[in-house]
Amino acid sequence: MKKPRVLLADDHTLVLEGFQKLLEEHCELVGAVEDGRALVETAAQTRPDLILLDISMPRLNGIDAAKKLKKLLPDVKLIFVTMHADAAYINEAFKAGATGYLLKRSAAKELVQAIQSVMNGAYYVTPLITKDVINSFLTPGQPRILAADDLTARQREIVQLVAEGFSAKEIAGQLKISHRTVEFHKAKIMEQLDLHTTADLVKYAVAHGLVSAS
Image (spheres, rainbow, N blue to C red):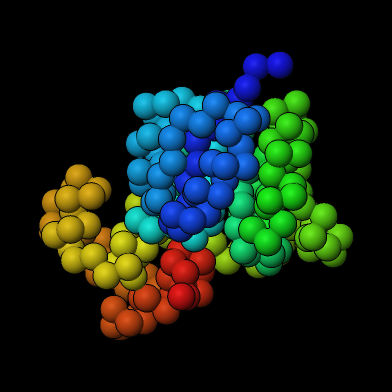
């Protein structure tokens, strides 16, 4: 069987190095990146068969990156490897196009099996996620933590970048829009969400999983 072409994405260098050592015999590794925006750009260039990604990543979180990746590469397999075991995160991951979901604490034991499963057309969910959690993300009407319905994809990008401490000018450069457009979006977002300070916006971003609390 041909080795799958795999792209890795995690904002911790040691995690990436560990994945590389674990997978080098089983996969053709086409790249490793440390933020969500670099992930989308590198995927467009390398066109991998499978991508391993985290939920909490700088510049663009894994959920929103996954949505962009599935539009760009509809057939790509996405396996989330994350610390988040909450039902709402799992729910959003699969809605965004995930084919697998692992927890970092068990990745060393499960990763190769997960890749083999999804490359054979199956879904893979770590056994560490309880049956109750799995049932909850399959049940309609569960609360959404990520990708809140009241914000557009562009607004979520801006919220994340503001919460990560980027200035309006820096955000404009990253998103290739004008400084005034960034300021307009930020003001509109704060009005929509009834927030009054940048600190409130940061708290919102953390609460909705757009940035890590750490």
